[in-house]
Image (cartoon, rainbow, N blue to C red):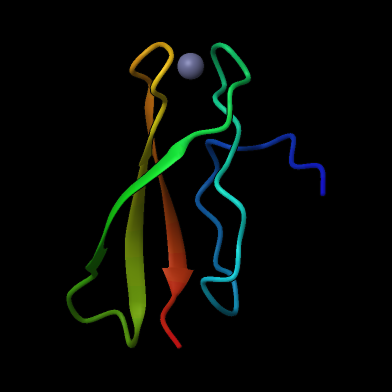
Length: 64
Ligand SMILES: [Zn+2]
């Protein structure tokens, strides 16, 4: 599955989702944590980090 916009927040139906690729070095990023977004009706911020260069990113996902 190709994803060419890894830094854009996206709402997905569930957590069954491959980690994004690093925008800097194109390595597969590593899941760090997820945190519920207050007052957002089930949305969570999911954080990823790149082990190669330290780049971090977040996705906004819908918790199931
Ligand atoms: Zn990287």
